[in-house]
Length: 283
Image 1: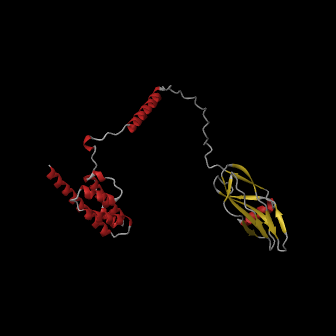
Image 2 (image 1 turned 45 degrees about the vertical axis):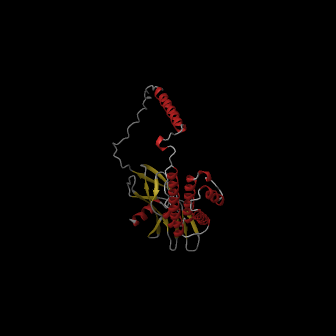
Image 3 (image 1 turned 90 degrees about the vertical axis):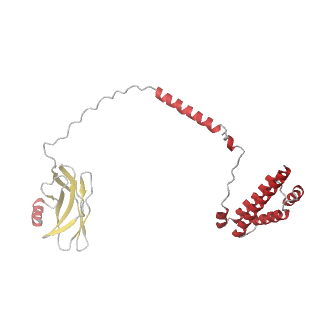
């Protein structure tokens, strides 16, 4: 085949490009070749084929030899049928003595056949349809929807602003929830345990004797309690209040804080029991 190309090049001249296969179709691999003078020691510096909307290069330029001539080949695929004129890139011949010769690319003629049968034709475009008739829509559904949204928003605002009424059984009654003191102590929140125990003792004293409720000075409160309730264990109350106050603001171990809470519970029970006995004697 190379010998045939060499003979075709000699007959058609150095600027002729040959195409293989002879009847390519759209999408086939097409080889475009030309013969160039190739004396001993000559080299070809070929430029790549440029892609376009109708062809895509498939490989770099390939150079072979056919006797005393050089064969320059390009592989490409074509995507359009018909007689196509392909601008071919130029090439540069570099001789053994270092001189160079520029060979213009010229134009290759490639005939590409269609893969579709000759009877296949595209359908003629049809004229566009006229505008579709649109039913007239009533605006009342949108109006009713807007009014419903406004009314619903007004009801929601009214219900949010209205004060909530507590059930009669729940008014004036506060449920006492015992904090998880052991869990707090295990987590290292020892001061929180001491604070709960302190307020537990103060709350019991304030309930049993409202006249000292809210007293800020423990010493003054204890002195007043001695006058109002001489039968109470005032020394134990004072010691426990001081221990709790110290534990609220100073480092203390968890077991000591829990022990103080147990003392508070026991002392509160004793105080309530003493007041119950006084009430029974008075009645």
